[in-house]
Image (cartoon, rainbow, N blue to C red; front, side, top):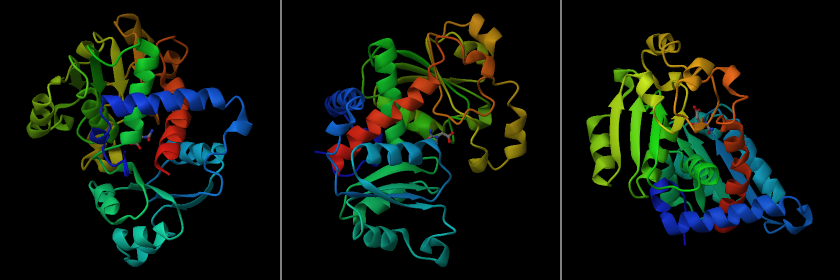
Length: 301
Ligand code: NCD
């Protein structure tokens, strides 16, 4: 059984099925709120040292729906990290207060470091540009719900593969299933490095990169994420790409897209006129954050 969740690679097909089955139950049980008190008396700590809306609020709501109490840190400034305390010490202390920790931090690899010293289960809520495993579970759950399978998929992803932890975790997640094919589209300077590409190919994922938006539009499933300006050195140049890499109603009309996903926040990458189309599933995807995070909390806490 899973103790900490720091990478989507810890979730193989069998465990994903278990999580999805519990998430289905959670979604159904939500309609009968009195049944959901399985975490009554527990305390969940949400340590979010980077901005967050969906992840922190949906973990908070998921904990509340399971009857747990929540303690939280939002931002480094109000925490002792700003005094120079190490993440290891912070985790050891908070583990004395809470039964499970969800951690978001701007530096890649911090979740792994924190899990190593944490005496209570720890969930990675995003570590820099590295991974966002709970988002990947939401994404896979949504694809399965909308398309009916997780193998033999032709997926297009844009537009900042280099810095998007959501794209990194989803690529790894898709590599756990046979016959998946991914095309990453975006400006060349934001492509994945060759070694990351090689690593994914080594797992059997077919993956290529392109600068051409038109090639993205040929894919049946398209997953886009904003340019991660806070992680890009030349953010002014990246902001200049916004017009070139935007999915609007005209692009949808000439596309093969059956399912359009975005982990959100949506900044520029999808025009709001697309929201009314049946393929636009990003708000359904965001809502799936509740049953998936309820399932994870109930399994790990
Ligand atoms: C993502 C993240 O934090 O990486 N947001 C989320 O959790 N839904 C995507 C993003 O910030 O672009």
